[in-house]
Amino acid sequence: METAIILVFVIGYLAITLEHSIKIDKLIPALVMMAISWALISLGIDSFPNWFDSANHALVENFPALGHEAKMHLMEETLLHHLGKTAEILVFLLGAMTIVEIIDYFDGFSTIKNFIKTKKKSKILWIFCGLAFVLSAIIDNLTATIVLISILQKIVKDRNVRIWYAGLIIIAANAGGAFSPIGDVTTTMLWIGKKVSTGHLFGYLLLPSLVCMLVPTFIASFLPAFKGNLDVEENEDDKPKSRFSGTMLYLGLGAIVFVPVFKMVTHLPPYVGMMLSLGVVAIFAEIYSSSKFSLTEYDGVESDAHAHHSPVHHSLSKIELPSILFFLGILMAVAALESLGTLFNFADSLQTSVPMLGTEIHPGGHAGVSDLVVILLGIGSAVIDNVPLVAASLGMFHEPMDNELWHFIAYAAGTGGSMLIIGSAAGVVAMGMEKIDFFWYFKKISWLALVGFLAGTLVFFWTRTLF
Image (tube, rainbow, N blue to C red):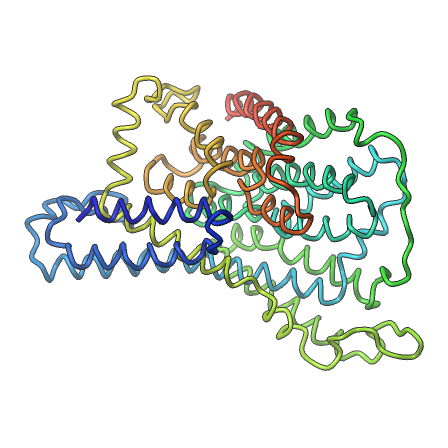
């Protein structure tokens, strides 16, 4: 039965990886393999030799000797435990997504466009990469990519030039998301799973992530695509449609940044702080939307299409539920393998059976997972979605909180996906928005992402000696 579950997982994994080829959204195989995996566990509960107690992070002693009812109860408790941990991540993401949509409701991101005063291509490149790096650490790399490419489309009219900018934005956004607990889904998973803390995450990964962004941007600024000037057009329609656009931008971003502070002060799960932040932002959104003079007027007519209903309801209606359901499916499917002890046994064989990828002693004086294993995981995240890779690592490795392994995994999985356009959520959304060809990206951008990834890795090796 365990073999059947592994086979279901592998088939589902392949379907997720090949979603663009088979034309089936990745949330469908994720949900199907999750449901089938747990159904097979329930049907074959008496045949499994091991059971991993995730709450205590240890294999259950004498599991085969337990009765059927005891095993079923243990399975239900484990399923509930994993659902609770997954729900923490999903509720957190729902809150963050809603705040971002509220900012967009007030056209807050148009404020960013006012920062760009130059027409020089190389300077615009540095501005967008810098914004991508900073914004992705605050509102996550996926949202930052969507926002910046939307602004880019208003500034750079030539698509052949614009896709170059989009490629570098992907690299910068993924780098920025790696060092922030709210910058990337995988980093959020490690943070909520109590594998990394905010302070250590910044300490370990800020410099490596910065170098991962700076090196490709510096090299690209000398390429022919970024030589010369652009014709930056001013358009009356691009002006903010609400006089509160700037206020809501800073309020929303500040509310999201407040979440890690709330967690450190109260020691409550991050989703509680995110719900508080959402509530505060929603209060101001409702007040501003009901203000008689909240909207600008063109020819005496209100220009905002949302004037007659709640901004919070409108924002909730725009949440990407397919992404939320995908995370639910993949995290619960990985949880099924973890519960059987499959990932635990795989990690053990990975570290002991293969000398080249075995354990080694790191500067802290403790045994750790080989650097090569994590580097391969980073490269693998360019081919395979990094969410299931990190979810699998949570079940495979059991180093304590803030062990360098977790920080290296956060960096590798977060930035390694930039090497292929399908390797990260930021890349996939940019591919859709600009119709970027897979092979064009591979030939023009992938080598820059690889150089940045390796440069950041070397800096990480140096920074970990400081801890």
